[in-house]
Image 1 (cartoon, rainbow, N blue to C red):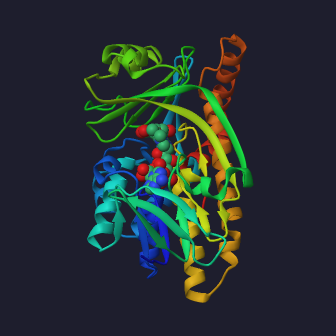
Image 2: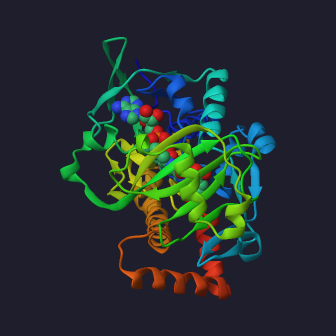
Image 3: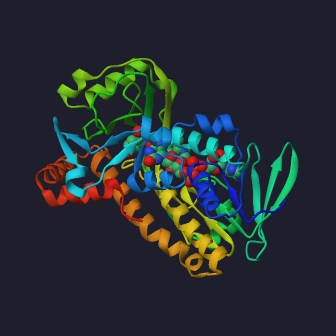
Length: 388
Ligand code: RFL
Ligand code: PHB
């Protein structure tokens, strides 16, 4: 089998890329390890930057997001028993859209299949071969049989554990990595959110986040030990811990209910340099990971594939190589700034050790942000997303 651009992975990066290429008349095929049901059931990020929303509009996959998504103009920082609002709209003229990654993925898959796009589900890629040549190949398995997809380019959008980066050889790349000494325990429940906007809470017991998926579905997180297990947590234990970490008036308003889902995610900062080897490009989590504080992961996947689609369009339409040659550098400039912001926000909000001075320093910085227009603008500018 042959195609112009072979894409590994049907997460947001791979799916959005297929749509952007299709809009320019460039053919692609996606191979995805998991089933469609599995991909559509994964619960992950919840906040879309304006740039990501614009891309979804550009590819025409925006109808449900416009109806069901919740535009937010601010978020709150809770600390030392106080709650301070960061007015993103006033500070930057921009906001964000609260619309789950699960829904984005469902919309992108449905639209791609309706337009006749090819996605092979339950088809794990095993390797990318000959990417130094003009005919790279994805070797993948389907129904127990080995297949080859010959392409002009391969874009590995196969996440942190994918095979794209490994096919290049990790010894040939510069990898920067930091694991944080805690995780996030998340709950999804059909209860109205405690507030109209997100609340990021710094507390002596650890971080907490109040987020949502709709007016009737909430997503909450509490910082937990890295070796903690979901089995250790009853619903009541989760709600009690969350309440303790919120300012008293907010805790009083919290409505609780049975979990729809509960999971633990580790926190990591990770960057691969460069993001390209020959005809093989890396995009999204395959190339970089950020801790979820600040909700940048999905949005970085979107900016990467925007640059990849631009570079591939310039190649096919005008035989230009310059944007492909600049791809890695262009992505990484934006990636490093988001990695920096996510690392900084994580450091500001989480409990790292039992040293009381660390917590007092965090509270002093949060108090500074609340009282300084310049600091609030800087925070809001990064939160709504740097331009691409
Ligand atoms: P994805 O979404 O991980 O998609 C990669 C896809 O590649 C497939 N795949 C393969 N397919 C074929 N052959 C192989 N050998 C393959 N290996 C893997 C996978 O099955 C999958 O479908 O990466 P993408 O598209 O780059 O998108 C990035 C975002 O998904 C990611 O940045 C965020 O979801 C990160 N993230 C979160 N970000 C936030 O901003 N807020 C969050 O609350 C948040 N929660 C999370 C998260 C990521 C998680 N992961 C990756 C474990 C929670 C979790 C659990
Ligand atoms: C979420 O709703 O899952 C979410 C929101 C904001 C974050 C991280 C996760 O920073």
